[in-house]
Image (cartoon, rainbow, N blue to C red; front, side, top):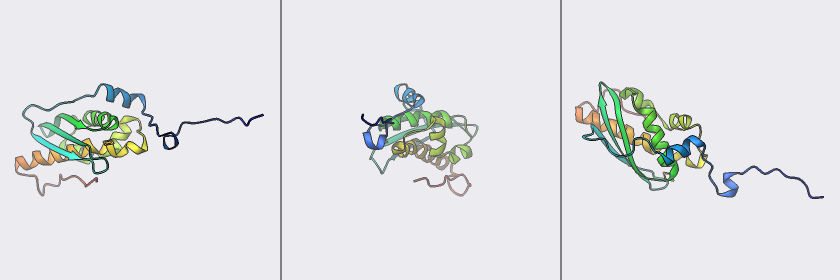
Length: 152
Ligand code: FES
């Protein structure tokens, strides 16, 4: 009689990647896609691992991120996590937004496959760059203690 085996799909041995329902929903219905009209800050960043990139535009009001939109040439993980990142960041003060990192996005997503964690950095890096762009336009981009940690 053949030995009975249970089989748990594993992305490493099947080559498939499993996204949870929330991540799939954000991929199929991304929030805050596009560009903010007359943005206060703009940034385009690339992912050194895969070469994908993301453009972020923000509107700042009363020291908070009021709008944050993105356009990306990226994988489903990048689209979904960027959409989630916009929801996490909108409403935050600039110092709070600068403190965000990819762990905050992964947590808000309810987890993403390990192989896709780097994709979740795109929107956060672009957000930080867009905030720096905003601060530079305000003439206080340096030495105000708001610079983000380097998350590369
Ligand atoms: Fe390039 Fe996900 S593989 S952003």
